[in-house]
Image (tube, rainbow, N blue to C red):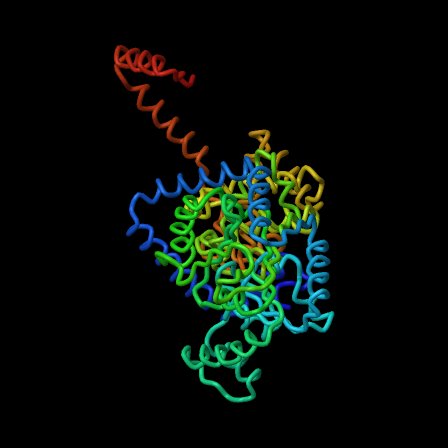
Amino acid sequence: MSGFNPTLNMKERAQVALNDDFLRNAVKFTTEKLRFGKKNASSELGNWEEWRERARAIRLHTIANLDYYLSEFVKNARAKGTHVHFAATAQEAVEITMKIMAAKEAKSVVKSKSMVSEELHINHALEEEGIETIETDLGEYIIQLAGETPSHIIIPAIHKNKQQVADLFSEAGGETLPPDTKVLAGFARAKLREKFLQADVGMTGCNFAIAETGSMVLFSNEGNARMVSTVPKTQITYMGMERIIPSLDDLEVMATMLPRSATGQKLTVYMSAITGPRRTEDADGPEEMHIIIIDNGRSQQLGDPEFQEVLNCIRCGACLNACPVYRHVGGHAYGWVYSGPIGAVLTPRLNQDMEKWGEVAYASSLCGACYEACPVKIPLHDMLVYIRRQKVEQGYTPAAEKMAFKGFKYVMSDYKRFKRSIKLGKFGQKFIAEDGVITSKIGPLKGWNTYRHAPTVANQSFRDSWEALDNDLHREMAGMDPDIMKRMKEILAKRGKTDHE
């Protein structure tokens, strides 16, 4: 499965992506389209910063009182006939799912897009039990056929172009299909419609859960989520424990911010608020509804002053579209479910494995573009610095890097050593510089110079230039009138400067 090769580290995965022209062009094209869409949609709304502050306030309040709102949601959901389960780990969530599947003697499942289900690897678990599992979101369907994992929170197949999709669909359908969007969408529609009607169980994620009503809310642009949640007799919803909002009034704010931040839309095409299973008077809906509330590392962030705000995330993907690193390497380079800046924070925090996952925090320029894009103002760039610090404090820094920084400290802590190192650098660069730049790809220069050139050490340093300027000034002052000289010294002294003797 692309991007999840356990033998490759972050740098190696990124190198694979950088060497894939199809991927880079597809990701660049789509993220630029999404960014400009968000810019236009937020401008049309007006008072965007005020909306951001309101959305942030809702999320801060909810997470600070998460136990209360979870309790309210569970009480109200159960009152409407929903079965609510709690899973502390991904494995527990899988076990709960399998018990439901066994009780229903289910043989087939249709799924709408759910990033939480990716955490569980639920497709693999179901397939091991011989249960057919079909992704019905078009992007998820594409990557399922490709045997890959999502490359973007909102657009799972962002790294694929039309020709690649046509090849996948042609293989699945046993006929040659052209790289035409309408034709490809029509093929998927025909294939998936059969699956909707045959499925025993529908599985969904949860964009938001409303505490005051016990409702779960789904946002969708394709209508597949509505089919998944109404046609099969049994519905299972996977819900991250932080997906709560207090009221329907708060949903208005989130329904305004999420689509504008995610795709540049004023509203998603479909927004479904589902409150319990089908009632007698209802025209459709599941006969039985289960919601599995999943922790899987989320509670570890509660009470942590540096990381609690990461639970504010509404999974819009805006930080991915703004991130210069993500736009070059796509999502698979990050190696786990979540990618981009939010993934670089969530991956080590949810997995609680700094040795294995701490490296993804370095997939950032710390430019802060993610914070500016985030509709709930999560300071992801600060969190990435905290994770880097933790990685160092826990002793996972490579030995070569430790030695390099010890050498840096030794040189920079003494002016004379620093000056000698500059002179040594001037001499050494003669052997690796060409036309005023260092083009060598030896040692640590390889990573930098593969895509750019390193500047040479200047022939005259700032300190040398300043010393020369100071000497020139003294020579000029030596020829001045003594009274003028005295007055200049007085002025310099008042400014807190001292004369150089």
